Image (cartoon, rainbow, N blue to C red):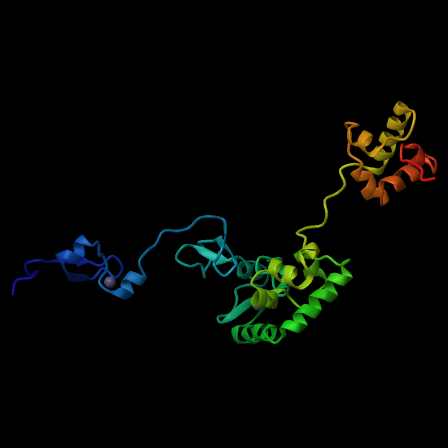
Length: 259
Ligand SMILES: [Zn+2]
Ligand SMILES: [Zn+2]
């Protein structure tokens, strides 16, 4: 029989370099490999982005020369960080994030252990009941002044936040449902824009200009700041005036005396 048969072609596999017969319709579809196993080994495009987050929430970095880099040239950052300090990980070992945050790849947050041990460690997370998680979050928030951020939780909680994700889906949902939305914040409150000294000076200047202590409206229209930074700093607007200008200023400011 003549070879190739009509309608068939002989191609050279791009992976194993063996020749193989292939029907022309397959050639038109773009098939270039002799078998599924060669197709799986096909060279693929590298992904040189320095840092990406994987679908599982890990940080992936481009390190094409690393011995365990995948075909895109990528390595999980937490493994790389650990290996830089301790040498290559044994096969079937994992690197665990002690605080439960998969993106916190500081060396002191990482611990290498056999895969089996790592799995059972995370099974332990699953042992917390919903009520235990609620109680723990309430306790931790109480230590933090009744409000809680992710960062503060990580600092204060004896257990990781991972089981909260499992039960409530997201950290925010967990806090909203357990403590209410007032308890949720993302980072520490912003630093005040005005220093105490600036506030004192401005209130004194304005008082001198007016010849008496300003009202709330006058402070709001003073062009420097509203009465709010005073209320924040001294507890209330009246208290700020009392402290900065003296006891009398509070009543002289236009508030009617009840007789
Ligand atoms: Zn092949
Ligand atoms: Zn882990």
